[in-house]
Amino acid sequence: MCCDVKLLDLLLPMRCAVCGAGGEQLCVACREKLPRLEPPFCDRCGAPTAWPVARCRECSGRRLAFASARAAVAYDDDVRRLVRAWKERGLRRLAAEAAEVLAGVLPSPPSSDVLTFVPPDRARSLQRGHHPAERLARELGLRWSLPVLPLVVRTGPAPRQRGLTLADRRRNVAGAFAPAAEAPRAVALVDDVYTSGATAAAASSALRKAGARRVEVVTFARVVR
Image (tube, rainbow, N blue to C red; front, side, top):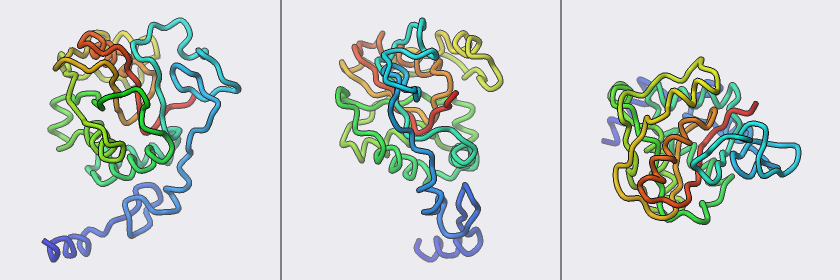
């Protein structure tokens, strides 16, 4: 096995997913430059704000099934390259890198008894050969000493969200998830990127139907508007 790994490294040397430098899938310099999100935040959706608020313009007036959402880094061009390499190019070790960064920025969800994850679309999961959100959840479970359980399933193929308006994103995922098992009272829901909050809200609604009374959303990255 050791020889196989060394041969593979010779044939396909590892390069940083962000800058392309050889040696690691995420080099030290690029890891340090990732744009960590710093307070103040919106208490509900976690959007960076000028001062602490209970609700911001992004989530005000929306019915959200989750109690809070937090992310580690802003979804800029470098983070986009990192996430695409992780999700689309099969660089699975980047899940551990993402979890390490996330756990270094965010504490373990104080109220949660268990971690779960936004479930995969079957076709995309087969195409990728892995499920990024589940892998991130399991890496976080190791770091936070929390169990990871599949508590939500998709009711059908995952609708494409790219290019849709915020309102269309919310309508697109309405009813997209269902409970897979009875949920504990408090659950942390893990996903790779928080874009509009539509997917997180829809999956959280399924968790509430499964018995959860509090859902805290945790993502590696977040789109900042």
